Amino acid sequence: MRTGLTAAGLVLAGALLGGCTTAAPERPPATEAPPATADAPPGGTPSAADVVARLAPSVVTVGTGEGVGSGVVYQPDVVLTNQHVVAGATRVTIDYADGTSSDGTVLATDEVTDLAVIRTARGGLPVPEYRTELPRPGDPVLAIGSPLGFEGTVTSGIVSALNRQIPGSATQSSALVDLIQVDAAISPGNSGGALLDASGRVIGINEAYIPPAAGAVSLGFAIPAATAVDIADQLLADGTATHSVLGVNVARLTPEIIQAYDLGVESGALVTRVPPGGPAAAAGVQAGDVIVALGDQEVGSIEDLLGALRDTDPGQQTTVAVSRDGQRMDLPVTIGSESG
Image 1 (cartoon, rainbow, N blue to C red):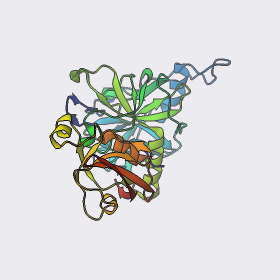
Image 2 (spheres, rainbow, N blue to C red; image 1 turned 30 degrees about the vertical axis):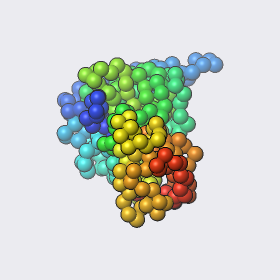
Image 3 (cartoon, rainbow, N blue to C red; image 1 turned 90 degrees about the vertical axis):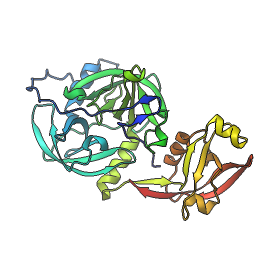
Image 4 (tube, helix red, strand yellow; image 1 turned 45 degrees about the horizontal axis):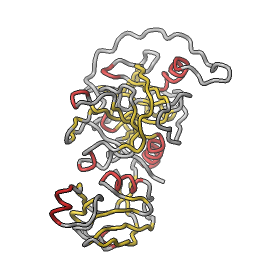
């Protein structure tokens, strides 16, 4: 299945969503790291300090000249980061935990999931383990990155929630849904860095945060590792990533719209336009319909619809359920595809 999500730096209704890049600071002199303790305590999980010592060499700082973000080693000479970190650049600078630097070439990006892959001039980089199974709410996490340019910064917390959608995001981007929410501090410059589980496996790519100015406290978000791995492999294979498409324009369903048009539903995604020639048009979806399910997944919002699409493969035959004139209709549909 292709799943995923992502983007940041958007002004949202009711809250400012912070993209995690920051202006490039002067690079501080390198300091010698203490030796790592490789073994876990007998019969227990490695300490956070052990995990950090082992994983720090796999997290890098990505500089574009305009700003600084973070990245995670994906292959011995490939770094995975956010698309908004590279921000259209083709050449970047990669700073490593041992104090050295090298050039990097942006190989490909995907705007839909806000992910990018970079080829590093330096090879032999340590590749961490990526855990594609989702964590559980309450699981401990560590975030490593370069907030405000402070390289190798570690923060800790727990998984606050899964499959999280940032309020208002879906009307501006098809990303920013199905994210891992954490209370570990994430700041400008953390984007593209690693979110780790207690064993040091990468469970997410740090993506965005809602800043205190919006009234938030410790609201950070990461792209699940399953999404990152899927998209990175596609980008490395042919330079593009394919995403499932239904072929509708949708708007948020408000109580006022429901009452004004007597729609006979309490939630869903309101179809405002059905472009001709797309999957939805072929299925018979019409403007004014309210999408209430895709396949076996109920749809209560735009974010729900986008999340269901990410769990559906291009070319897959399924059904889209719509409410029309107060009546539910299950329409057969073949999901389309697009490249990001």
